[in-house]
Image (tube, rainbow, N blue to C red):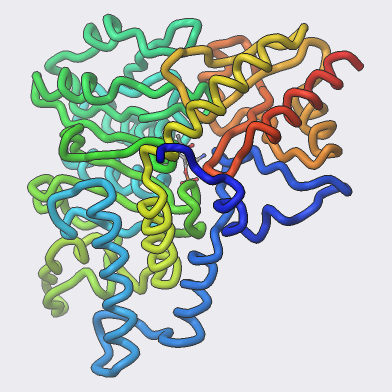
Amino acid sequence: NQELDINLIRKDFPILQKRVNGKPLVWLDNSATTQKPNCVIKAIDNYYSEYNSNIHRGAHTLAKIATEAYEGAREKIRSFINADSCEEIIFVRGTTEAINLVAETFGDDKIQKEDEIIISVMEHHSNIVPWQKLAQKKGAIIKVVPIDDCGEIIMEEYAKLLTSRTKIVAITHLSNVLGTINPIKKMIEMAHHIDVPVLIDGAQSIPHIGVNVKELDADFFVFSGHKIYAPTGIGVLYGKKAILEEMTPWQRGGGMIKDVNFETTTYNDLPYKFEAGTGNIADAIGLGEAIAYINNIGIERVQLHEKKLTSYAMDQLSQIPSIRLIGTSSNKSSVLSYILEGVTPEDVAKFLNNDGIAVRAGHHCAQPVLKRYGLNSAVRASIGIYNTIEEINALVGSTLKIARY
Ligand code: PMP
C-alpha cells in the first residue's frame, strides 16, 4: 500500500497535539526545521539517562555502548544515502558547517587565482558565502547559473559556464524557496565530463527525495539532521573516499590524530580525520533514529504523499486572486512560496499565525533568488511527512481570508 496513514504518523509527533492561539497547530515551516518523532526524543533521553559516555576512548562498558550507538547511526546514514563505506560519512554540525569544511580544505587546496566556482541563483546563503570567502582569498571567480521564470536551471547556460577554468560546482538539490528539484544527476555528469567535482547541498532534498550518492556520482553531498526529523546541531558531510583521503584535515585536536609530538602530527583514518574534538554524540544517535523512522515508512511513500500535497496546494493557492506564486516548476516538491498583492509577507505570516498556522516570511537565507523575482521577502509554507489535505485547506482558507480583507 503506497498511501501513508497520516493520522498514525501524526501520533508519533507529540508537538502536533499542541494548540497555538487557541487553534490546532498547523506546522508548515518544515523547510526551516521539522518536528521530532517520539523515537528520536526517546533515543536522546535514553542516551543521557542510560549510557552517556565519551566515545572511542574509555575502556569501560558505557563507552563501548555509546561508541556502538554512534557508529551504528553512521552506518544507518551510510545505508540511507547508499554510500560505499562509513569512512565516507563525516559527522558535522549541519549543512553550513559541511560546506565551510569543503571550501576551506578541498577548495583552499584546489582553487587558485582566476579559477572559477559555479553555483546557481537559487543557492542558500550557506552555499554562497563560504565560496565567496574562498574566491576573495584566492582571486577566484564565482559564476552563477541563471534560472527561468518558473524556477528551473537554464541548462544551456550551465553548459556554457563549464570550462577548463571551472574547479568546482556547488549546487542545491532542492531549492528552499522555489521547491524546484534540480536535475543534479545530469549536472554532475556534465561537470564530470570535464573532470570537475560537484558538491550537492542536500539540506532540503534529504527529507523529501530518496538520495543515492553512488547513482548520482556526487563527489560531496551535505545535509542537516534537523530537516529530516532529527535534532539540531548534527549533520553529515558525505565525500568520496578517494577525495577525502587526499584532503587535509580542517579543525585540529583530539580524535583526529594518530600520533602527536611537538614537531609533527600524523592524522587519524577516515572518517575521524575530519572529526576533531568530542562530537555531538546524542544528536548523532538521534539522527540515526530519525533515519530508521523514515526507512520504516519508506522514502518513496513520503515522496508520493508530499508531491500530492504540493500539487494540490499549488492548484488551490493559484486560485486566490492577488496571489503571486514563486517557483512554479512542475518538478517541485514541498515548498510553497508566495506574496499577496498589497500585504507584506510578514503581515500574512502574522495573520496565519493567528489561525495557528506556522509559516515563514522573509528572505529565507536566499536573498539572490528573491531578487531574481524582484522581491526582498516572501511567505513560505513548507510541507512535511505529517501534513494533511485539511491543513493545506486551512492554509488556503486563511490566505484567501487575508486576500479578501
Ligand atoms: N541549504 C539549504 C538549501 C537550506 O535550506 C538550508 C537551511 N535552511 C541550509 C543550506 C543551511 O542549513 P543549516 O542551517 O542547517 O546549516
